[in-house]
Image (cartoon, rainbow, N blue to C red; front, side):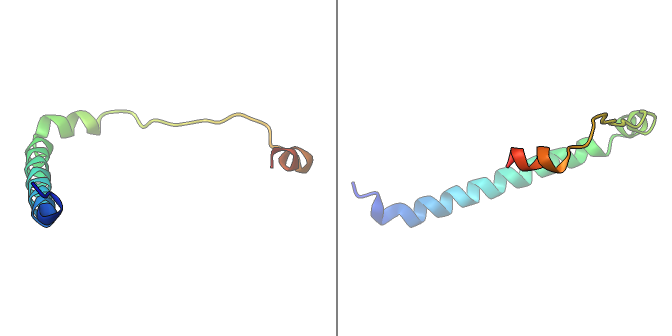
Length: 66
């Protein structure tokens, strides 16, 4: 059995299966996104804030990191 001769067919079949699975998963996510209970819960969630407290590096410290 010579797989090299059939490599183009194997690639095309894999691409078609990948495209079909991506389309099916996108359709499934679209139906979940349309549920109003999820949107209402996300609208009342508080905004997350990240605060970074640190001193700035001096020029000497920056040079030593390189």
